[in-house]
Image (tube, rainbow, N blue to C red; front, side):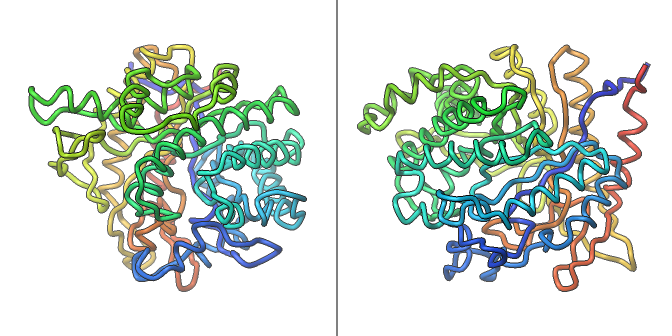
Length: 444
């Protein structure tokens, strides 16, 4: 018998606020670090910004209709912190909150379950002005924001992701400088990584104090690390400890790998990691782990004392230059289930960018279909092994503002004409709809 997903497996699509909403100056919203970064010369492709993005702020009804048309049972979106608290703290901006209430109401009217991400990289610029994630106080502001947003949804949204991809926020924002706020300092990177992971714990505690029924998770960007040759296993192991294990252990076990602490401690003063943070991390239980998977990583020993060299990918690549390797997802899920068998898993992002073209009224994207098929079949395989994967979210519902790449990379299963804002479903959207129906068991 052909493998099938259980009837209650949750299929959805994902987006993030700054990438799709637009309306960056409306209804009391003030700038985030991404508004400032994108408007800084030379930071994004062609100087492009998220000022208009996909204009979902005004067109969310259309996008919910698309979700319904494609048969998705869930929509993962993020809340713009600076739309709710323009200064990062203080009183709620009711006009901003009302937008998300209307979005959630529209989803529920269409039997679509909201999965709400509280932090998808768009820290209010007002908080950046007092240190941002380098300032310990930001963890408290984040916990307060998270608590108040959850309370405002009044039980209509009950599943939340605290932080999206803390490793990317830390490394791309504070080491490479490719993302906001554009710093290039390793000690800052580690400080921010800790404040994001401890901030997740403080926010989780604040949420549970007002809602015991809420499910709380975190979305980690994870990549299986492979050695380039047989003699590079130690380089691969070190890279994995820093990029994967540090975040996995913090989220799932409430602690960091001692090897990583020892490694960092030889270079930096780690007193910013306070005992109160560890106590809070240990006290929290993760209801689910979100896994964002795109590609594997191959490394060899390099010059950097803490990071190995990443080798250029081989074989079939996406438009981002990322390797297409569904087997990497399998290796990742098997490893997570082995190390943290108590934690349910959702694939909270998986997808690929390709240079799509509109021909007539159609967008044929066979390479994306092949990509999705390979990764969905991997999900079926790991389910048959008893691994507790409960859902899959394609990245992304819409072509959108792809951070430093601007609008040059198209991840969506829906093509967006950024001049007219017209939405054109791609062949992959219809393929996905039909494939899901054909491979999901009916409710008994």
